[in-house]
Length: 142
Image (cartoon, rainbow, N blue to C red):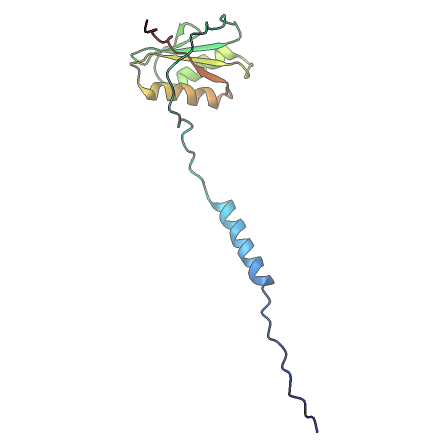
């Protein structure tokens, strides 16, 4: 005669397969998801407040100018038209194989933002990542 109560085994739920499935789903969605490339320009540019003299112009600089009508000039040579492909060819010719050249973008205050964005996009497609903008000196209020 057995007087001890009958002890039942604890029922356990094995979570290992569930965790494996969750990780597989996570990896699947991470690999298959395409991300939208956000615009690289999310900067509120400040006004020039320094009165420092600009450094002397170096020959190892790519100078791109955009005038009020949206015409491009690469190292003071006018680009034939406003198409990005033509600008790309002009930059390739000016840069040759030197992809580490700094780029100075000088844009007229009345030019469209799209013209400046085209310059930045073409330069970044060619591997030119050191870009700066030139600005006028601030007017001193004396």
